[in-house]
View 1 (cartoon, helix red, strand yellow):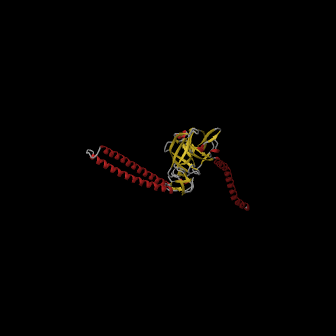
View 2 (cartoon, one colour):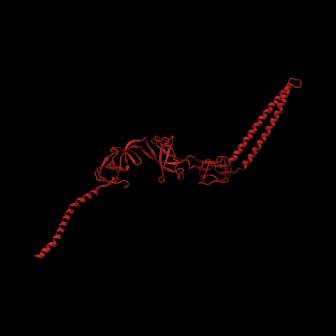
View 3 (cartoon, rainbow, N blue to C red):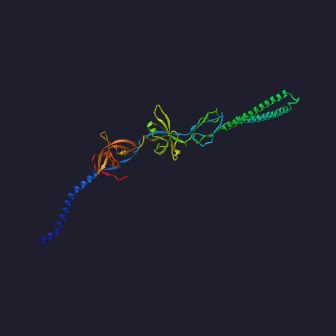
Amino acid sequence: MHDRTIECDVMRPIHHILRQRSIMTRVLICIAPICSGIAAADQRATLVHIDDSRFELIREVETVVGHLVPRQAGYVATRIEGPIDAIHVEVGDEVVKGQKIATIDAEILRIRMALRDARVSEAKATLAIRRSELSRVRQEKNRLQKLKSSAATSLAQYDDAVQRELTASAREKEAKVRVTIAQSELQLAAINLRYAIVNAPYDGVIAERLAETGEYVKQGQRLLRLVSYRQLELEANVSYNQAIALVPNTPVPFRMEGGALHHATVRAVVPEENSRTRTRRVRFTLDPDTPYSNLAANQSVILTLPVGPPQEAVTVHKDALVHKGGKILVYVVRDNKALPRPVTLGISSGSRIAITQGLQANEAVIIRGNERITPGRAVKIAKPNS
């Protein structure tokens, strides 16, 4: 009897522990479905990114291919004829305005200038003689005029003196003209001698050599082609609808190869339309901070041009658009659910597009994750930058 009492005392705590474990097991069995349901519901919520629709000014834009053109570019020609003594530059050399780039042999020109100088001296000497003759004849005429009333001088003698004065005066005027002619010829010779040195007419880079040392060139013959790369502009051929939206000083962004974004402003719309392409030429001035060192004439660029006047409209990000069943939808988040909204599209500009029907401003629209959304699907909004 005593042993049974001891056995009961020993087993009582063990039974108590087993009963507690049984109760905990039953509780866990009851809670498990609830927890798993919560977890499953959380797993079914789709992670999405949203962006609010907004009411703003929007202006339709289009991209147009343009190219860089130099404001100054052309051929440098010789102003005189003769053999080329030297060409002082190579293709690719950068030159500044007034820099010597070629020399024409000037030996004959120096001789011609010395000859013209001698002819000036000769003409001046002849003028001095004619003036002396005129002075002598004029004195003789004046003397006969005083004696005209006396018997010592006849009227015929006086008339002869007058004629001699007129002749001497004409010769003196002729001598003056010859001096002027000789001096002008001397100036022309000096100019031609100066033209023997060909200077760069503006800052630029030598793009082409068209003559070599030793060649005999005629007046006006091309020697080099020069391009001013520091005075570049943009040129693009645009449609009428684009042209009417481009007034002087309109800012226009453009991108070059490599994706670098720069800006320019409209300088002029050329009032001439290409009858074949129905386009007009527009010139744009580059911003002063544009890195000219990376630019080149005829380089292609992509311009973003406005089309028509700006409009007020509700806009969304283009990533919000979903095409389903021939319709265009956006998904609006309401009470953590994705609700489809058929919309009508308007004009677009950059990453934004106008919605003319189906959406109001300040609505949360899904822009990422909408490709796998179904109507009424539970969603979880991602944190910004996640």
